[in-house]
Image (cartoon, rainbow, N blue to C red; front, side, top):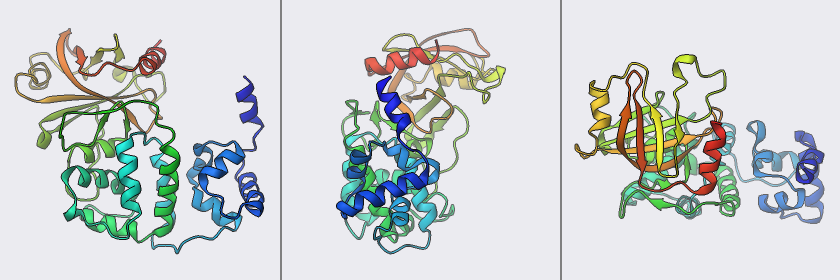
Length: 326
């Protein structure tokens, strides 16, 4: 209650944030993003609220900025889409890459290529076309030094907010996705090696068949109480235990249909099933629950499938998931 009262006492309007940074810079002209958050008592989300950014705040407070690029404002705004990043490998790799003036995709390992694809697909999505190559998108981002500085500042703060132990899908895997880290749909597809161009194809449904990776990607929302779900799409998805997930297929799926058999026989056919979930439809990012194995189902249209996770849920995630569907 005390912490909530303190947060509510902090002015939230943008002009107040600008005035605060301007005042703090009188004593500390070199104040960076991390320092501003400490001095002001604000969270990273406060700075990036409403499509704003640290660069925008600095500009209005009179702080010096690096030269602007041709797509400066859309790219600055896109930095706020990365506040969920929470795995050490991604943060470390991005900080290293952003510090170098040139980044050649051709010289990267497949794992690094997917990591940089996850970054540029998220940040440059509104500035590229479907024909833009990954290298062209990298060069476009690198042509915006202030945006790169903004990204580096955010990643430095995010490095101190990692709150789970993560592990790779499999040893020596080309996929950089880390179990119990969070990813958007764009990042999931890029991390799974789907597509070679900079722009990632849209993923609208709950299941994506990643054929080139021989995997089924399941993305589902736990709390379906919002108006975004019709009665026909309020499937009952929840954690039965730390290792078992109850998931319902689309309402048209029969157990002996091609789709139903694909789910039931994935292990026999050598196809991976990877689960991703979020608490609310308003959340951009999904927790990656890791590989899962079919353990049975009841009924059909929809099929109520029980999946067994290879990696048990951390206690806090299990409690949060249970609360979301209570």
